[in-house]
Length: 127
Image (tube, rainbow, N blue to C red):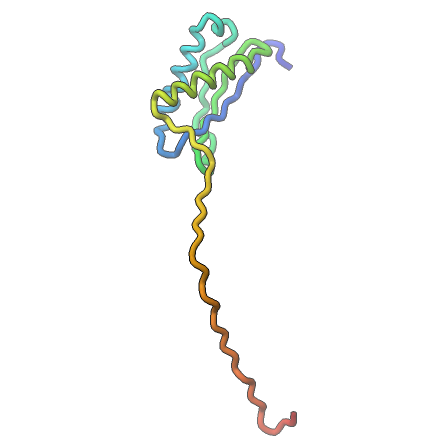
């Protein structure tokens, strides 16, 4: 299954307020730095491939990318890339959102009045 190369596919979620071009630039910079690290240089086969905006989620915009690695090295490279990317996002002020909900509890409404009308008998019928 991983005869010649492996791939680490990333779904990176960022806040809607973030400039996705800037986010992609940071992603590329971090991948380039990782590729120059002697501990990882031989494990990474190609520059990162950023596919672009992949999804609009409830609380994030998802950017999809792929790192092509030596066979079976995708997990090692991917974990280190994510670690470095988190640090870079923190340094750049890029928000990685987390799902959250706001619940507003208001005052209970008063019961709705129900008006009942009495049915009138038609003339000439017995009842």
